[in-house]
Structures are given as structure tokens and as C-alpha cells.
Figure (cartoon, rainbow, N blue to C red):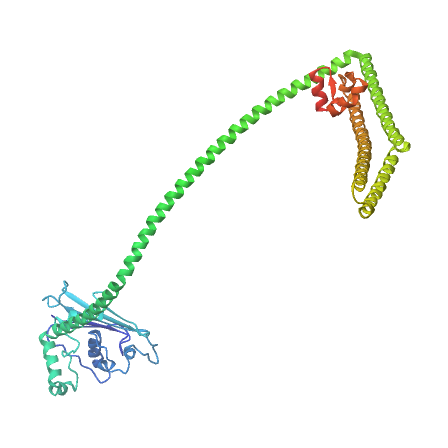
Length: 463
């Protein structure tokens, strides 16, 4: 394995792309001061992964980018590609030539690539460490570093020897594995803490999970019950709809029947009108004459009742004029006076008479008192009988007046009804002696209208 070539572009003083081809053996680069000989060595160290600006003789890393001259502008990036012959297979990669490149931009971004494929700095270091080319770069010995190597501390010298012998990469891997192990242990502790916390929360979560499962079950049951209730309600609504439809059908049938009946009634009315027309005006005049006759009889009854009322009033007046009541009241007053006198005589006799004569006089006075009391009772009874007779006469007058009003209404109804025969009072013959009793017994029934047929009675009732 040997360094086969190196290409520089924009690195320090190499503004243009410059390729140095190296052959097996020793290659010497010579030139005057300032020609860029050390820049070639810095480029090799830089492409191998140098991170410190001092390792490439710079104050900051972007100083390796061509800064420009009076004739050429500054460039925006620096790029170095190093090609290594791997025909011996020292590098763990299946290529006979391995090209490692590095590019740095003024923005501070850096890119690495192995055979044109982007990679990490760690990938480059692990690849070259297997060939004894590590980060310590003991293969590059600059001026003044010989004394540093000879005077190095045992720890630094051991690092150089381990890197040269290939042990350093295993140490680094070990350190990396230990760091990973520590990180894993820390993560394990954290995981254990989380596990304990989760276990602590497990029971409440189990209870919540049980509640969630119960909620799901109850929700499913609720949905089922709602569906059941909805189905039942739908069935009830359907039954109600069917019942309403049946009611509608029956209503339609009733309507049709009523329409048919109305049509029949219309036909009957038309027929009756035709019959009335056929009967002619003479029949109607006869009916009107009969109704007028009935009205005359009703007016006669009214006159009879009025005459009866005047007769009762005359009788009452005669009774008052004849002085019967006054005579009775006078007799009653006289009897009361006699009673007072007898009582006074009894009181006087109590002190004047003693013996049999006094007893006889007392018995006579008592008999006279009883007689006077009987006459007083008869007078009071006669007065009460006269008052009752007057009240009965007034009641009969009022009954006659009610009968007259009812008969007048019946007469009006008879005058408006067609086919009526007359009232019951007109059709029944009553003796004058029994007229008042019959009227009191039958009352308003005497004013009932008698029709010639049932149809006329229905028509009069509807009217």
C-alpha cells in the first residue's frame, strides 16, 4: 500500500486544481521557500481528518481556503483528494484504489467522501486506522516534531506505539464500547425507574381499563336497548298508522254513506216539493184557514182565562167588601176583651167570695172563658181559611196565565208547521167543572201539538 496521488484545489496557495502523482519508493518534493512544499504536507494531514487549525499551520480552519491575490479572486471552498493503492488489501474495502476526499466551505460546512460516496469522519478514521494511519498522524513528522517524539511522556509515547502497531483502534473501540455500555446502563436505570413508575400506575390503569371495558359493554347494551326501544316505538307507530288508516277508511265509508243519504234526502225533498206543487194552492189555503181557526180558538181561551181571573178578583173583592174578615177580627177583639174582663172578675172574686156560691160563680166564669176562647179560635180559623182561598185563587190565575202563554206558543208553532192537527187542549173535550183540575194535572202537556203523520212530526221537531 502506498500513496498513489494527491489532488489539491483551492487549498491554501493551490488555487487551480493540482495533482501530484507519486510512485512506489521515496518521493522528494523540492522548491524555493514559499513555493508551497509544506502546503502539500498540510493537505495530506487535512484530508486524513485533522481538526485542529494548528495542525495545518492556521489560526482558523477556513484559512485553508484560497484567500485570493491581486489578480485572482478568493475561492468559496477548498478540496483535497488522496488516492491510496490498496492492491495488497490492507484497507478493509473491496477496491484496489481508495480515494479519500474532504471539502470545506466558507460557511463552515465540511464534507467527507470515500470513492465519491459521502461518509462521516469516523468512517474515514476507522478505514485508515487498519493501515496504521491514525488521528495521531505519526506518519507525518514535521520540523521540530522529532524532539517532541523523543521527549514525549510515557503516555504519549505509548499512544504513538499503539497507533503504529494497530492496537490503538481496538483501544478506541473499547473506550467507545465502554461509553456505550455506560450509556446503556444509564438507560437501563432510567428504564427501571420508568418500569417502577409504570408498575405503580398499573393498578389505577387496570381499574381504568376495567371501567373502560365496562363502559364499552354498557354502551353496547345501551345501543342494543335503544335499538330495541326504537324498534318497539316503530312497531307501535306502524300499528297506530294502520289504525289511523283503518279509521280513515271507515270515515271514508261513513262519508260515502252520508253522501248517499244526503242525496236520498235531497231527492225526497224534491219529491215533497213536487207533491206540494201538485196539491195546488187550494190545499195550502185550506191549511192556512185551519191554522187561523186554531189561532182564533187560542184567542178564545185567552179571553176565557182572563175572564176567570177577573171573576176571582171580583170574588176576593166581594169578600173584602162584605166585611167578613173585619167582622171576624172584631169578634176576635171582642172575645179578647171579654177574656180580660173575666180574668179581672176572677181576680176580684178571689177576695170577695168564700164557700159554695164563690165556687159556682168561679165555675160559671170558667165556662164563659172557654166559650169565648172557642169563639176566638173559630174566628182565627175563618180568617186563615179566607187567606188560603185568596192565595189559591192567585195561584190559579198564575197557572191560567202560564197555560195561555204555552197555548200562544203552540198556536204559533201550529201556524208555522205543515200537517199539524191541533193542540191536545183543542182536541179533548173537558167539562167546565173539571177543566181546572185537568189543566192542573196535565200542565204543559195540553199545549202539545198533534201531527197528522210521523214525517210531519219529525219535520216540525227538526224545525
